[in-house]
Structures are given as C-alpha cells and as structure tokens.
Length: 563
Image (cartoon, rainbow, N blue to C red; front, side, top):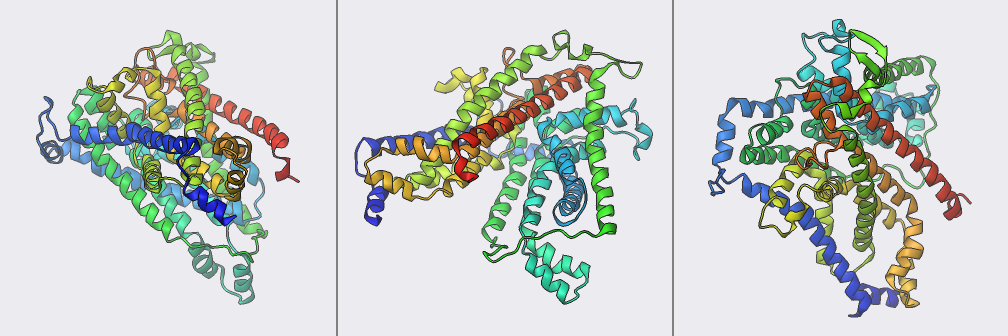
C-alpha cells in the first residue's frame, strides 16, 4: 500500500495528473484575481494623486495631519474596545450558564441567542432608533442625551456580535476534563480558586480568539455606524464618505489601508495563538456533567433572561416598527411599509436581486470552495502551489468588506483590465461576496476532508480509478454535511451583507441590504426596518429549509452515521 501511496504522491505525467495540475493552477489564479490583484491595485492607488501620478506617502501625510480624519482612528478603537469588553463579558457568563450549570431552558436561550446571526447589522441600529431615538418609546431610559453616536454604535454592535462570541465560548467551555474538577472537589478547593486555576486556563485560547473576533468585527463594521453613528466618524464610514460623498478615491484607499492594519494584526495574533494551542482533552478525559446549584442557577437564569429579553426587544421592536403606519402619530398596524416600490432605494427588485445573488453565491461558492479545498488536501502534486493556495485562502478573513469592495472598484473598473466587462453586473457582486466569506467555508471543507482517511485515494489509485470518480462517489457523499453547511452559510451571509457590496451595485443590481441604507438616508426609516426584517425572515426560512433538507438527505445517504 505504501508503494501505491508513493506513486500517488508523485503522479506520472498523464491526463489525470494534467487535470490535477490545471485545476490547482486555476484555483490559485482565481484567488489572485479575486483577492490579491484588487488589494494590490488599492495599495497602488493610495500612493497616487487624482491624476494617477505617483506621489509616495503624501496621501498618508495628509490623512494624519487632518484632525477630523485622524480622529476616526481613535473613535474606531474606542468603539471596538468597549464593544469587545461588553460582548466578551456577557457571552462568557451566558456560555458558562449554558455549559456548566443546571439552569432550566438552555435550548430556548441558545435558540434566541442565535437570532442576530440571521439579521443584517443594519437591523439593530434601526431598532435602537425606535427604542431610544428622539421619538423612541424608551428614550427616557437612555443615560445619555442622544442615541446617535458612540452609545448607539456600541449597543447595536453588541447585539450583532454577541452570537459570534457565544458560539466560540460555548465550544471552549464544552471541552474540559471533569476529572480536574473532581480532584479540586476532593481537595475542598474554593470555587473561586477552581475558576481561576482550572476553568480560565482551560478556555484561555478560546477566550483570546473571542476577543480578537469581537475586536475585528467591531472595528470593521459599516452598517451600524452608518445608520446610527450620527456625526461620530469611524474608519468604515470614513471610507464611504470619501468615496461616495467626495469622490476622493485616493483618500478612500488610504483609509482602507489603515483599516486593514488592525484587522491583519488581529488575524496574525489569532494565528500565533492557535499555533501554541495544545490539546485540553485527552483520550481518557471525562465529559463534564453540570451539577445543579439552586442559587447559582437562578442567578445565571436571571442573567440569561436579561440577555434574551434584550435580543428579543431589539428584534421585536424592528418587526413592530415595520408594521406601524406612521410612527409615532398613527400606530395602526398595516403592511404599507412593505410596499417597497413606493419608496426610494430599490424597491422589491432589490430584494429579488439579493435572492439571485445569494443563490449564485451559494451554488458557485460551494462548488469552487469545496473543489479547491479538496485539491489542497487530497492532491499531492505541486506542493508550492498548494501552499500558495492555502495562504490565499486564509487571507480574506483579515480583509474587511469595505476594503475588499473598494479594491474591486480600482481593479475591475480599470479600462485596461480584460475583466472590466464584469463591472456593474451581478457577476462582480457574486465574486466579491464569495471571496469575502471564503475563509470560513474553506476551513469547514478542509476540516471535513481531513477526517477522511487517505487510504480511499490510495485504494482508488491501485484500482486505476480516476481521482474525480473517487471524489464523486466517495469524498463528496462523506462530506455532504459540510457541503450543506457551506451552502447555507454563503446564502445567509450573501443576503445580509452590506459592507462588501455597497460600492459595487448598479441601477440594475441594487441589493436589499443597500436599499435599507438608501431608504434610511431618504428618511424612510420604517420601510428600511421592514426590508431588514424581511431579510432576517428570509435567512431564517432558508436555514429552516436547510435543516429539513439536511435531515432528509443525511437519513437517506448516511445511515452509517447513525447505525
């Protein structure tokens, strides 16, 4: 078998080897054209004046000497730090309650806490306006004068980022060895010492990852700051103002490069931390069975109840606002706000454009990403090319959506680019969204492929079965759950994304998430909330369909998993 495997490692020059090399090369070219080339063009643009002449770092010098522009960096850091502290604290207590306590209603809390994942980041900002705005129903509860500013941005970001942090921390707290706690109990160790010496060290890597994920999402988000930020400038909205408001593309490129730095730094630190991570659970580990402690469980239930109430309040307010005839003077319920064709911003066509784009992103994205992950994991030819592909596959995680969208303008709008025909079409929106969410899907596919023994390929080679036949008959069916997860992840995120596509739509390809911004800018806040609610329910409906279809397909094709 080892001889056969060795032959596989060094494929002879035949049709199969040619196809493998060609697909690998096409995969690398795809990632270079979809990511590296646009980012390189943006870097070059930041070093030019408006006439296209090279001026070195003059644009950067202008940026840092302008107090209004430079202040955005400080504002972004303040917003990101406050959001990270609040979200990580709340998510840690909630995750602890869900994994380590005997609290009742855990399934209900987990279901409610996942709801923000299906809503665009614009939805909490719109809801905050109705709750705490100048005519909000809870305006008197707000401890500051206005919701328009840092307080509103932080509250909206906390709602949107909370489920991302909770998922990581639940995973971290679920994987611990119960024997450590039994030993501590036998030694009569105080609870606070157990927490500091066993619980926290056991989840430190998950905690560090959570901090960087929250910080990166907060500093790069555009939707919340755009809707509720008021005059409080942050980096993401500065890019929009420079490009859309002032047509100053060079300064937009400079702000994008600056916004790229904290995201890359967080990504680099996260990678370093991940490399140092060691196994926390051995083969002899015993799973933790949460013990019931009435007082502690009641306190944790109160805390989780407050979190769930906040999440439901924000979502419920957005739904209610979308059904009000004319806030706050005519509170009669109606569907008038859903007549999008009567509003400025995009109409129902923008919603169907989003559906079309999400469909093509899910279909083409799943096929491309899974195939490239397969080539990277299972094909042993051209190791240097595979390492290049792996590096390029990880890069999109460190690139904010606004930066990617602006770099696409510079690259695809150039008359000298042969791909210029894509500019202004649905195809560029599909490509941009696919690349923007590439990394998570690639990691999902790679993780699933790593779990399949390489002997399948070796045996296929010994039987002279082409690799694509093994892929179709063995690998793909075994990885079906991951394939379905990737497709629904791409669809839901394509429906709700705004930052990556806000620069790239045309009059014929206006998207629903962009229409929310346009309607809000035009003063049609209630229809904007209605469109955001519609996007959320569409994403929830797709997720429900995915759950039913997955259950049916897996019960038919993978009965061995449940045998």
